[in-house]
Amino acid sequence: MNVALGRRIMWATAAPLAALLFAVAMSSIVLVISGSDPLAAYGDMIAHARKLETMIDILNRATPLYIAGVAVAIAFRMNLFNIGVEGQYLLAALVAAHVGGLISLPAALHVAVILLVAMSVGAAYSGLAGVLKVTRGINEVISTIMLNAIAISGLGAWLVREWQASGSIEPGSATRVGTTPIDESGLIGDLNGVLEVFTRDIKQGKSLTGVLVLALLVGVGYHVLVNRTRFGFDLRASGINPFAARAGGVPPKRMIVTAMVLSGAVAGLVGVAEVMNVGFFPSNPIRGLGFIGIAVALLGRNNPLGIGVAALIFAFLDVSSGVLQFTGAASREIVVIMQGVIILAAVVAYEVTRRAREREEARSAAAALAGSPA
Image (cartoon, rainbow, N blue to C red; front, side, top):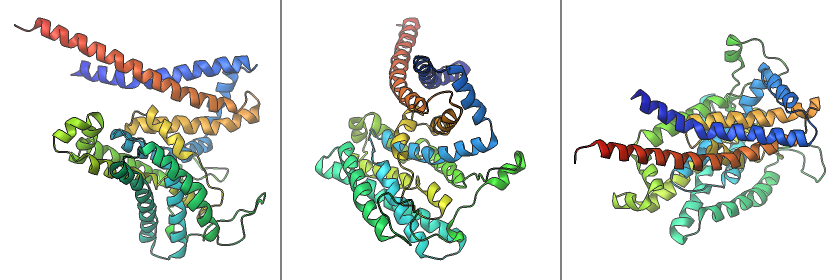
């Protein structure tokens, strides 16, 4: 049993580690070619990351990336590609922030309403792609790309102007305006008090987002749903072999729509971290989290723990890009190169390890059959 467990752990970690080592090697080559010292660049990144305030920045950045990764992973488990997390979380955050700013309720209820609105908008918008797939046969990649454009450049661009609390959005203007500010009762508090019990006083005005707790709950819920429920079994079975799942009584169309709805519901929570941080939906929200979430889910192999590690890696690279520019050890673009190489290497490494694992399993099965009585 211990040997079998060791082999499973080995195969599970081989591909991500290989991808990281390959990314470091390729990035080092690029750094040398560009005239930079790889050891100095990596040293600056690690030294910066060891600071408590930097760790807080990394966790704050990893929180929405983790939620985005789980949202993508839910669809991946059904062999679906929800590339629309970007539009889903931006639209959901905008509507949730607007509703949250218009109401006044007791703290717990106020926060619950904002979260439910965000999840409902994300679920409805993602579910639309699922409905189009099962009724019209439209591939979810095409539909979610189109829905992204509609959400970001259409609905979002219109609503963010309609719901401005004050000021106006003009080209070239440095004014920071947004939706009606949410009352204190509708905001999730930070975790500084808890963190300082185990560390020291946090400086530089940094605060660890309380949405981190929500992200952990999302991860636990994802694990339980996928690995400990009948629905999760049907979801995984449909993703691995839809024909066998259908023969076993699993309704394929219902599973597709349900998976897209659940994926969108989780995607709706991605933008909550920023809304809870600033207290409203800004006119220039953080973008790109949905697309990075695809890479996070891929590197994490759709596993809740793996997604967490991948989110921390990408958050570390994002936060480290600034210190490289400050110290002059390397260009901050090296971080973008590393992220791209990690994604490419992960795809190759997973395929290589999959084939190697299948060959080993075939040899083990052949040896077992050779040793069994005729």
